[in-house]
Length: 191
Image (cartoon, rainbow, N blue to C red; front, side, top):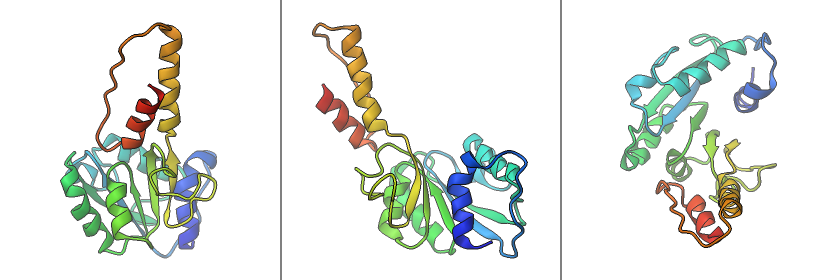
């Protein structure tokens, strides 16, 4: 199996390949870098990590026929919810020459600064085009691909629905995490 095929299966196969399908055998053991924003690295280690999200991801790879230690291994790094650590963790992960990196949220900004060659699979970013990770959703270009939450569009729609429920003037509070500025700007513009 070639690198491009593995990355394609990783990014798209999770949703497309039916249960019971088997991955082709491979001589090379692929190294998947995993960057977690909030998890501790200790909770992300091995074929059955304590991190629920990562464990679900690895379970799906098992269902697709990939065997941990035979087809792939993981190189996890956990940010423990401390954004100031993200650049160093990304740099640590790029050094071991991983084949692909799976990351989301604030870790993506650190990765964008540090690598333009290692493929990065984004996990649920609000607006990959607006945030400069992709040229378009159909053709991302560069080394970033993955899943979009389309959160910016949804934010505007949520406020529109609130206005329909309460047509008169009423104050609305919006709580947002500082790493999702596009969502905040969409809420502000809609308001």
